[in-house]
Image: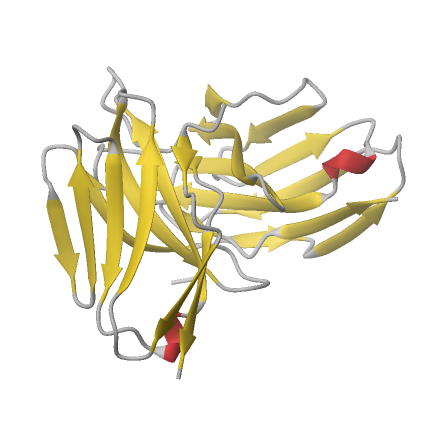
Length: 115
Length: 117
């Protein structure tokens, strides 16, 4: 079956702009999580959606937001972009339950560069 | 505050030998641990996981050991192969009352493993 699909793969934006990234999870998966990867910081958890509801949230400013649609596809939005937002944004999907059997499967990521 | 730490940014191992990657955590609420492998320009790939009720889990060449009292886990790869060269991330998930999934993963900063032919 198809894996996790993230679009676009690469993006260049200027400071102050906003950006929307898209993630299509594996068919049947209801949980979608978003992570930011930067050099030296590893993967930082942004938020997780399950059945269209935000279930978990990381320590990121309100400029970072997301949503999930009824077909489990998810989008994340970053407003008023800053240079420090340049990173690889990874989406992960999982069944969402039961616990202990829900390893996350990652997409290839969207490389965002803010200039 | 780095709750999951991988103190070795890089490791080089001869092909055929054992690779040991280490991970320490500070949050006693973590009770589910995973290892992911990442190649450049790709997303992380799940390798192996362990629940806090176990101290060892094995899958082929990969074995994960958990020492809860020391808040330490390690990934053993034996024998190491050139295709194992990648960045390895340790991740941890906290206990949740709802018993729903372990989606809020806290990752370490990764260890770059290089297998020398």
